[in-house]
Figure 1 (cartoon, rainbow, N blue to C red):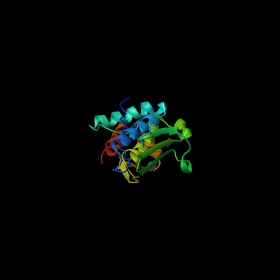
Figure 2: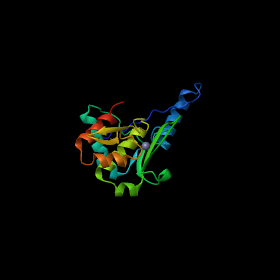
Figure 3: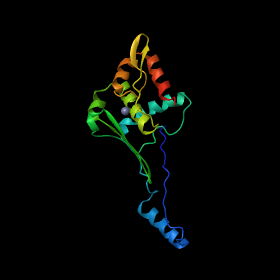
Figure 4: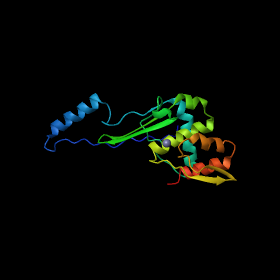
Length: 178
Ligand SMILES: [Zn+2]
């Protein structure tokens, strides 16, 4: 696994007047009860996704991009709003970031290998790279195709790119460009 996971920064506001001994007690209590920094949740990643995450990380690595591509709280199968194939839930609060990816099991099971990688990349685009949707179309080798993996309905990009490695390369180049 090359997937980088980030321990999110957290803030605890405690009255500055509090004495040193109270500080120590508070720290012992936090470590004892929580066992970890408050606001930090151990990432939960369904092992089904691990090889696909590795593929995405490889694409990043070959483009000289290293780091926390999947700084997400969780990637799991579950129910998504509006029957979407995948969904990124992102929330920022005082405890840090919550970035949860949910993948629809049926869409996953029925999808090609390329579609699965693209779907996961799309959600990582939202959840880890803060990307929005991109509905731009382009003409590639005489065919009109989505210009980006951030197209809503990644399945179309996967269909067009299924047998064209040049188009696949375009999508990864575009994906890893700000
Ligand atoms: Zn999306």
